[in-house]
Image 1 (tube, rainbow, N blue to C red):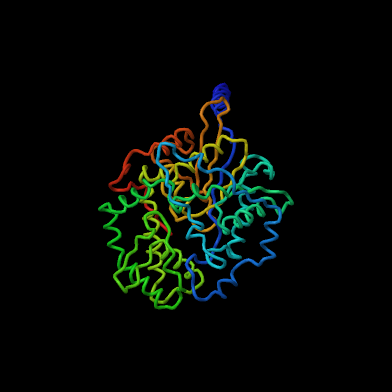
Image 2 (tube, rainbow, N blue to C red):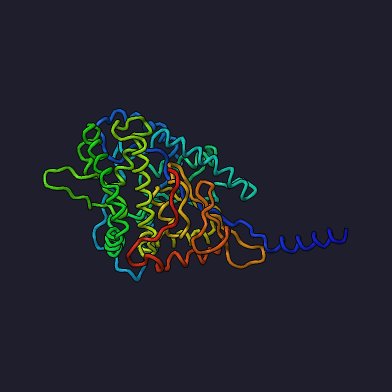
Length: 414
């Protein structure tokens, strides 16, 4: 009896003041299902997949979008900045039909909002209010509409006003056009010329060529398809012999074949196995390049600074609506282990920020769609947030200025 009492007292002391209390939650989510970014010939079919105007007006009726904030405050003042004019439209933004959120995508985001409502209620012990939430989005229609869908699910259609800041696109994706720093362009090319990287590209070159030929010969591609180019290490680097069509970049092959496969429109000569290999290679390509701490710091250091600011800010919940490249950029910049799966549509990276009851360093836990992502250097599930930020902004270590890009583990299942 005395032993039980002593053990209970010890448990009380150990589990009392040291128990961390959740302070705030940051959510970075990918947009929902979309039409291909690459223009295709059957515009009527792809137009039919989009939400109608009445639906879009309904989800956006109480939303104000701000595009006047200054993202440059988060840039590294020690790095020379690009003086090239910013592109009027990122090539991945798409057009009136292509690169747009579909009806399915909107439903996915409403469902995500409903799941987040339950998760946040469990975390905080009560429902979050609209006034508890701060909102960011890239300035792409599909991400803005996705965030509106998330809010619909999160607040059950509550008639509240929401302000979305869409001023930070240039630091919310790792491949802004142009890059924020000229040095990033140089480093991307250097890393893409590494021996291991080139060996992997060579081993996959035949698949890229045959898949590109299959897409062209199918008659699916519309005029202008060859002008689509985006992604770290891929922009405008695809050359072809005179009079010969170029091999499509990996990012374009992945997005095209994925959209076509989902709707059973993939050319017969590209098998589901081929499509999976394309996705696997594209995933490993992106993760491999962005595992360079130096490149990651340049590409995503500014976003890490914004994240750190929000983690210490007054908002209980901060939501960023963005892209798969944003999730990959954040995972690599924060030096988290690779997830077991590519971040599909409506995936979300959750950053839970805890404050120990007795005071001290804030702790953080990171997860992608519920899968906890461990830090590559710091031990434990709950890790000091300041250390995570410091390491992310260090820019040194393996693969720092070039050579072989470092890795965070294989993506086992796509």
